[in-house]
Image (cartoon, rainbow, N blue to C red; front, side, top):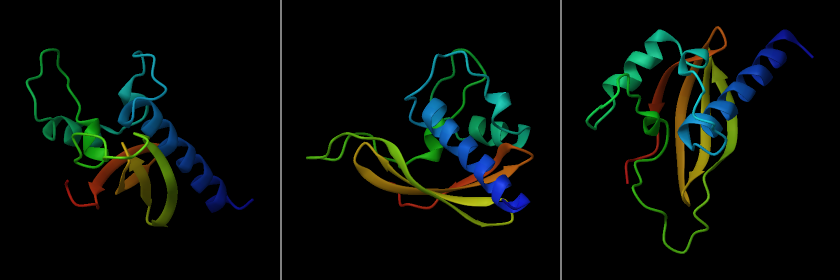
Length: 125
């Protein structure tokens, strides 16, 4: 396996772990430290994107990494999962997923084994 392939595999595992633990909160025990998964740049952006009152700072908008859907898609299975992670170059990955039955895509940038930046590609619902 080439270094690039190994790096992409490691980044892919990181992205899947972040979506399970933080974004979809499927596999979380509440004790996960976001600093282990996100750079200071990404954490700052997640704090800036937080839209609610923050009772116990810091508060992070992990929902910025998913669709803007508030409710499950009617007649869907209410599933949230990653469908595909594709490396598009320069540390950026396109993450395609199902979010409560809605299709979505977010680009994330990985720097030194952590998420450093992100941008939602799918339209807000």
